[in-house]
Length: 466
Image (tube, rainbow, N blue to C red):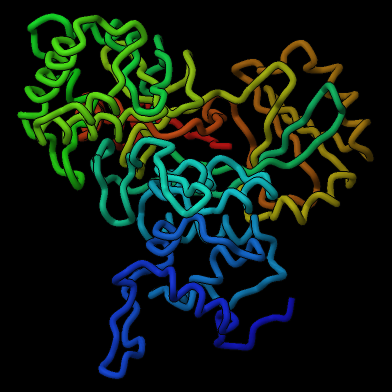
C-alpha cells in the first residue's frame, strides 16, 4: 500500500464513496456547494457508520478522517501501523477528549474486521449494534437500543457525569500452565465500584418477546387487574420514552391495558410468554403500540436479572455470579466477570507497548520477582526455566496470599508496575446493563457521605478490563 501524500487523508475514490453514505449534517456547504465547515468529529462519524465495507482494516478510521472536524488531532494516515494499535489509539483519544468511557460500549468496528483481528472486548464490533442489514438491503433489529446513546448525548447518568479518574492502557501477560506458553492480552485500566453480583437471571428476550419467567421473577401477574408496579413498567421501558426523554406516567397504564386486552381477546394465558410483535399488530390504540415498541427496543436479546435489592437488564452473555460495577466516567452500570482462573495469572505493566510488535520478545530474558517481607529477584534465561521455578513456588496457590505481591515480566517491558491482588481486580467485560433505581446517580449519592468519592473509603477499586 502506497503511503498517502502529506496533507492528503485518503485516495479520492474512497473519499467519494464515503460522501455518498455520510450521515446528513456532517458538514456545512458554501454557496458553491463546497465543504465550508465540518460539523462532526471522528467519534460521531464512527458511531453513525459502524458497518461500511472497507478493503483494509485501517480504512475503518482513515476513510472518515477527511470528513472529521478533529481530523488533525489523529495525525497523518499510516498504513504501516497495525489495525489493533490504530483502534486502541483512537479509542484512547476519544475517551480522553470526551471524558467518558461510554465509547467502549458504542459499536464502531465492522464485524469483518473484528473477526479477523481478534479484538479485545473494549473495542466494540458492529455486530452488537441495534440493527443488521439483510440480503437485499433491508435492516432488521438484532439487539436492544444502546444504553449509552450517541456521542455527546447521554441517556443515563449512573455516575453523575463523573470523569474517568484513571484511564490507562495496559498489556496483560497471560501465562498458561497447561501449554507452557505466554502471550500478551490487551487491557484497559480504570477505577470504579463493585456494587453487587447477579443473584438470579432469567432467559433472554428472544425477538423482543416477554418471557413468562420474567413475570415470575418480577412478581407481576398480567392476568390480574392490578397495574404493574412503577419499578416493573419503568424497567421494561428503560425508564425512557421517545428520543431518550423520561418515561411518561401513561406508559404504565398503557402497558396494563395492552396485556389486559390481549388476554381478553385470546381467552388463554400464554405458555411461554407474550409475543409483543403480535400484540403490537393487534393493538388499536397508538399509545399502546408506542409503549409495546418501546418495551421491545429495551429488552430485545437482553436478560432480566436480580441483584440484592434491584432488578435490571443484562447483555446476552451475562450469567449468574457476574459483577455489576459502576466505572468512573461511564454513564451506565457495567457487567464484568472475574478472569482469574486456576491456570491463569495476570501481569499488567502500564505502558504503550504494542502486543503484536512484542510477540518476538517473548523468548528474551525473564524475571520473576516475589515480594513478601523482603524483596527477592531472580532472572531466568528462558521462559521454560522461569515456569519451572514458578511451578515449584505457586502451583498450589495461584491466587497468591494476601500479604504477597507478584511481578512477572520481560526485561524489555517498561515501565514496570507490580500487580497487587489486594488492590487490583482483573475482569472480562461482559457488556453494559440497566439497573432500575441506579441510573440517575443514586449510588453516587450513597458514596459521598462515606468519603468513597475522594478515595478515603475501601469501596473504590482499580479494575483491569480485558
